Length: 156
Length: 156
DNA sequence: TTTAATTGATATCAATATAGTATCAGTTAA
DNA sequence: TTAACTGATACTATATTGATATCAATTAAA
Image 1 (cartoon, rainbow over the protein chains, first blue to last red):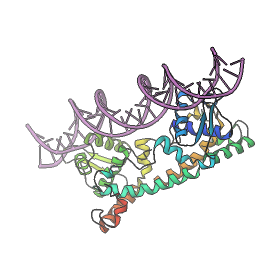
Image 2 (image 1 turned 60 degrees about the horizontal axis):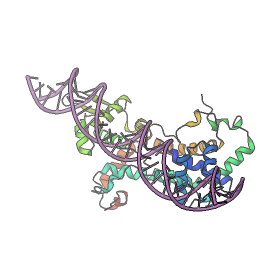
Image 3 (image 1 turned 90 degrees about the vertical axis):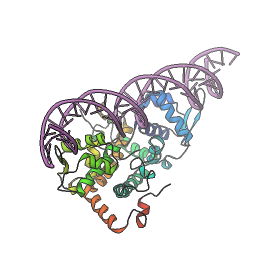
Image 4 (image 1 turned 90 degrees about the horizontal axis):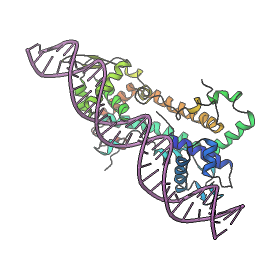
């Protein structure tokens, strides 16, 4: 079960970059190269984020993308919703028959509660918070080689 | 974003039925009919649950499936893991390069925390608990038409 | 004014995951 | 002996995810 798809993952990374370079236009090419995100794929994501008013663009040479919203006003929950759709229990088959199945009823009730927990967590986590974490990490250790190693999954 | 796929959903429903009829063998056909689950699809799920020691089967006429584990010892988390794979942040690309990307590091750290929250919730929720909820609901109201209505999504 | 760097828009494709079906052999109660 | 079952496995269809390709429009700068 994948919590974040590539789309959401890439979008977050792009926003972290734009967030770090606020006030200037950054080209899709730059983001793509720096973060190793497939160029055309990324462009689609950026367009989508424009539509959702998270960023703005400038066309032409020296053009690019820039943050529009405050990073603190962009919860990961919103990105998940944009790129993966609303978090939902399971396909809502409840609409077909009104509570035809009692088991589904009970299941739904419990799972909706969990859904809320998840959504609350993803709501608290914003791009702004991640940027600050990132800055803090940069200040403390270099290359994730030392203290932060456990966060970095030094596998293989 | 779908939390539960059909596989997990059907598996839960099948287990609720087996849990309610403990000590007797229930055929795949019965479960399929009662819960409107595609027959052959269900059979695959049941086989999978045998492999994971959740249920046992008896072949031949009057055969079927029966709970093996205690319902309280089957957390939904386990079913999700069996049918949807372990809950994970995003495809673990961290293995490719050891922390090549600082942003991913930070993101991963935060998301792993959320992952734990989710897993904890799905761990607390067991088949046993759902069965008890189900019994309670059956005792209180009939057909989800009254007090429990809000749990039942009486849409359309 | 031309050109190269860029976004806007859209079409297409490939890979993977999800959902569902079909078939046949083996087992067992009646 | 037979009908009701499971075991095992192969197959198909559809949806989702991930990625690529193309061309027109815009703009800064040579």
